[in-house]
Length: 339
Image (cartoon, rainbow, N blue to C red; front, side, top):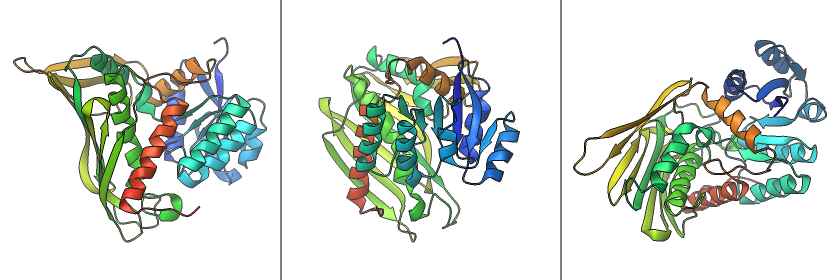
């Protein structure tokens, strides 16, 4: 790519700030504009991040000819509206997870993306990191034999702040949408790698969970089964500290991933453990020169020309399959949002 990909930011929250910071380490991209519904917030964010152009509306950013790609970092219920409008404006898209609130919204986004021939990826940054690629390689090489069980855990005890987006139902709160998309994404990725595919969809899905006072899930566990008798377990919680890790069990060993979502978040070293009967635990390590979101930006730039991400990055079909599982999970525990 002769010129750097020019990024525009929708939203000025914490995740937007982290992405803007890491983008400075990207080999392929640069931030040129930010938009907020408050011009003052956009101007403050712009000043902190290189004095880029500030827009007082999302529509104004979409009309900016300098912007090649938009990063949508708004609250969950706003993703679908602005992703569709970004596609219609001819902008490539990186949208924070979950891409949408349900399958119907996801399908609308994908239709807009395909109709307008723009690139779009759901922001599973861990899928763009060298640790994840190495993990997929280990599975495909059969280092632990045939994969039989995948356990993915993501849980913490958040303070009782009912108006916060994590617990506020009107903002898409609860663990399934905010956290559960990660374990589902991971399990489907590994189940697919075990079968020589980019991802796999379960043929059986069950879940139980606890609903809190604000009407959203506070902790819940899902069980699913894939082709080849692969069983997946996703355990999450926003009001229960369940830890953060992934384990993969095969017929000839297991792999433990202690930092699946933020490997070497701020550059540096990453590591996971390979355990095989009769052998000492082997640490599989690597080192990176860029932060997590810089890897994501560079991954996207490499795939813009072809219009689709490739494994381990989430493709459009992979994204739709992930949302189908989230809908199944919500239905299983009786979690429903308006709209």
